Length: 357
Image (cartoon, rainbow, N blue to C red; front, side, top):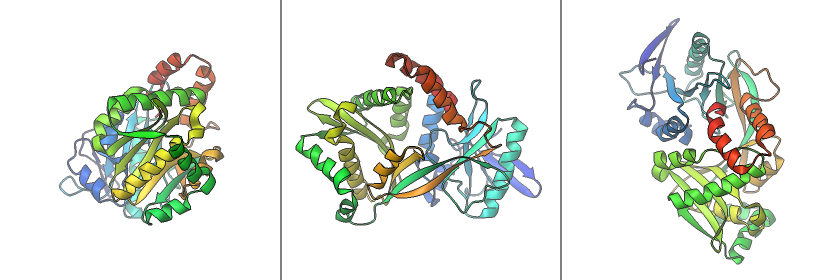
């Protein structure tokens, strides 16, 4: 399908665009109030380079005018899990960039027709917007929660809102234990973070993401990605990766040494990231999505003063299995690969993740 192909459905004109090539895409992301790092060209490039996903967006804007709305997807082609349209793989959320309900309805009608015409297995959209009506097109496939911290209050107010025992005390513990940290995007920091990611994923009996994914994030996003690693002496004890877009910072990945979680490395790194975000003028710190059956993670995020929201994965047609398709694949992987050596799990992750997104 060409980047500016016009589709006429009834009286509606819908155009497909390539967000990696269309010069108007960056302007839409910069101006739209609900755009996030997951809509950015850099994130889409990292997905394409790592996993081969083809990005595509649909809009009612004429090719000769600025983009005023869009739904962005990746075409995932997989012999293992089926061909499908996902908005967007490995993204916590990806809001429809629309201003009016009618725009949304026009685009959704087209996407559903496109799914049927291309014989794709399903279409998936990940949204926290409760005002949009997916009814009649999509079904709820899975519900998650997301947490966002409002950074507009003064820093001392944000600090007072931290849970005194579970967050403030752990940050002080890290300081007493002499835990230090480094921040940046170097290959050394990436390798140290990835070592912790591997340990964490193996402990969870899940294959780790391929290291190429992290390398490509750094290469594509440049200054919009930051790796922070905490050390006790010279040993990495915790690491996080954050992304920033406009006035929002996203906590995307975190991992730690299970034998040294008592040192408070992760709380210290998150507090440092929050302070830096505040200093840089960010207004929101996104803690990302959590499974509803992970109350420990949900409680941890809420102890930072973050507000909980509802995230729905909408699918057309709705999923038949009891688990959402992506989680079902990961559960199979967990059962099959969980007891294998870490090196084998790492290789399995490199092979499997392109089929999961």
